[in-house]
Length: 181
Image (cartoon, rainbow, N blue to C red; front, top):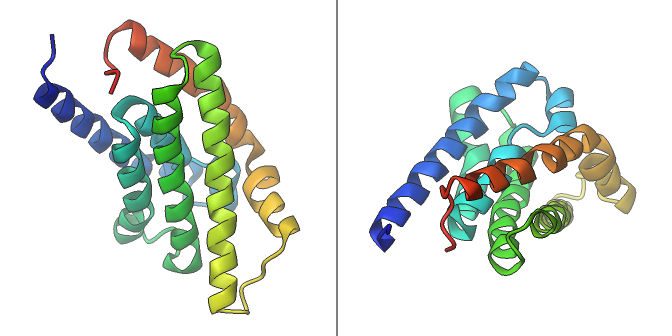
């Protein structure tokens, strides 16, 4: 039986691995912004972190990842991209962990948790874009922009997440690598 301290250390290790993946996976798209938006390589580890390490660690990894990636690789651009991504990814990690905590731990519950997390994360992106528009009117804001950049612009990434994340979470459950937190 794992103690609370052991579980917390394991969650920190999972969060560290997910944060490292947030830094490394965008290199698979060649650091090209258009491909990065299409495949959303930083979103995958943040969502996974919320599921496997819990809502707190998912939110922390999501919030820190864009800024750390900027410091290491020079992308995404701090303003406005990293700010929008930090809000979106923070909500991804937080909501993935929260929905996973309260919904059934079966495939359907995991899938619904993932869909809800994707929705709320994209909503956070839009809210941040709106706030940036209020502060700087040169930043465009419209419902069409949000739909184009958050949903239509990343359909491949959404599909990959929906196909890969639930089986990974289920496999980690079967292997007893995820705590109930």
